[in-house]
Image (cartoon, rainbow, N blue to C red; front, side, top):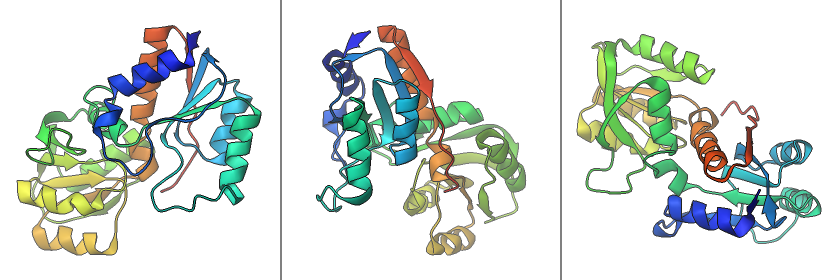
Length: 252
């Protein structure tokens, strides 16, 4: 068991949370019990996720997608009221990290996706940015575009949307988990063979085809399962607490 403040302070420092200008507050978003013995991790703090954390006996719910996003209404009504009510009634802490969990060099979503796929990291997608969200690297062995799509599908248990941009083998690759289809221009500028992210927009198709780069929309949720799991396991090792990851199916 660990004191909540000790755990939160550790996470904030470990993830350098204060260094990011983000779209939501990073760290403790909803205060619950003072002592934490069981951490439940998940991608998004949906109602189903909150209910599952309560059912699993969690003291803290740790997620990548929390609450209080910029631009949303501040009114505590509808789904926001119901989610917060469930957290508060059950004394369940909500801890959330967005960009810090994308970028981290050990437990970050992008590093974890590379480890899952066996990709070799060679540098940042955003050249000159020490906190680049995306990464660039190489496949352990060249693959044709369809083969890479199949590899992603097997690893993530979700068939990616594959937009073919050329006929050559894929060796150099760039990736950025989540909704980073707008970063395709950065991948194009680096001359990689393929770009992998979670989502796609209509203009992305034309950008891929006309610039000769393969594009893969492998799932926002699917590509971002792994950072929060790695962070949960890390905290379990550091503090001797229990950790359970719960995956709430999301086709996007």
